[in-house]
Length: 284
Image (cartoon, rainbow, N blue to C red):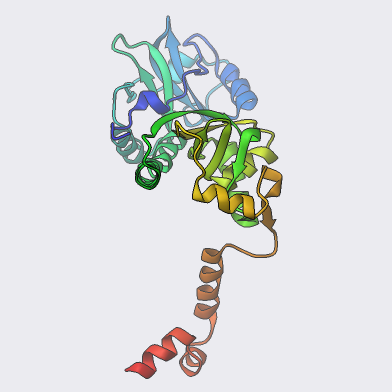
């Protein structure tokens, strides 16, 4: 988990391409069908150029792609570090880069969404290893960590409540392919959901049955503290999790309070400062 993130781990392997002999109208139709704003131009599997919506402006519909495409393009290699690609994308102001192998053949495409996804997932390994170390110390067992897909219907939740506004955010992330892996503890005959309750409920609402996860494999059927707490709270399946529709996430409430305070006239703020500021002033 300490390895550097590479383009090959996050790129999209199936790429829609066009031929140099296609016409601008062919590309326009493909744009309408796919919603993409540009395509690699390939000949015999190798990248000849790239054509974007900007390249086609003011062009006749029967103009050939090879006459209007961009030829001097930047490409990525599967072994490149994600951070390097992020810098290139930012500096060039582009949304994607074709990925080629050592022979120049197109093997994928890396987008700014892929880069964002890689950065989101970076936060998880430290949390995984911390939980692993804690469980090993408390229960005197050796735990292995794997990564794979888990069936959400097998998961036993350990958190009784989630927030509706954060759930909406996780639904958006899943639709865009940006969601980070969940963390699951696997004991004999039991799958405990340790982290990622919003993501799992979001997946259930979207009809997604399997989800990416870090899996902590516990070799013995020991009773964990979070397992006891879940049982006392009546948590046995995902439907037991309560979604708080009318209570916003604490961080959002704090943000809204600060925004409302900033909207108040300055003289009113000075007359009626928030409690924390009033206590601070009195202590001085």
